[in-house]
Every structure is written in structure tokens, then in C-alpha cells.
Image (cartoon, rainbow, N blue to C red; front, side):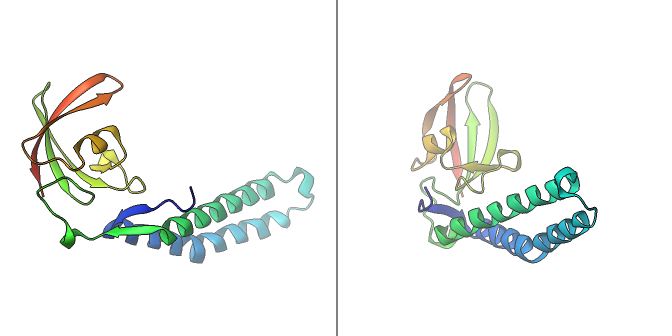
Length: 157
């Protein structure tokens, strides 16, 4: 799983690089200071501040390793190379929920960047998988927990 390609848009790559830089330069120092302060409280066997700071340090280090692996295996999807006749990573897609006659718009991104609340849909999600490679005008059936949902692809940009 470590060597799995991570598909990212240019914005997603920048976001991961910024997070990694923050963790390495600022967060590590903050956690290190917390550990130093907690050590000053004495007996480590009953020092919850120390335990908490060490746990936070472990989480930060694990996230750094995870980000480094993702960046090492990153494949950047360049917007200028994209064919807008078919849905692909980096495309913004306007869809019509056929049953409710509601339009929705998503940017298709790699799973690392996915955030449906902000309109970023993973290429590995049920809807993402159903529309990848499809063209405007096509209707797709998506197998969702609530049942089959039909979407019509209105526009790809």
C-alpha cells in the first residue's frame, strides 16, 4: 500500500507540501516544548501531561511519514493536459440528480484530496467511479447505501 500511486491535482500537491512543512518546522517544536514542560513536573509514572505530549509527538511523526509517502508516490494531474470531453481527475462536473431534479457540481480529485463538503469528490467514491470516463449527456446509475441513484452528466469543465 505504501507504493500505491497517489493522484493529486496541483492544488492538492501544494496543500500536502504545506502541511508537511508546517508539521516539520512548527508542530514538532511545539510538541517538543510541551514535553520539556511536562518533564519539569517530575515523576513520569503519574505525569499525564508528559503522556499526552508523547502521544501527540507520535501522531505528528506518523502524519509526517504518511505525508512523505504520499508525496513520494504522487502523480500530479495537470489541468492543462486534460481532455474536457470525458470526466477525469481535475475535471469539474455538473450533474443532475434525476430523481430529485437537483443540480450538483463536484471537482473530481484523488482520494487524498476528497472533501465532499467543499465539492471535492474522490475518483474512488461510488459516484466518482460511475462518472469517470463518461461524457456530457450520459446518465449513470450509482449504487449508494440508499439504493440506486441516477445522475445525468450536464457539463464537464
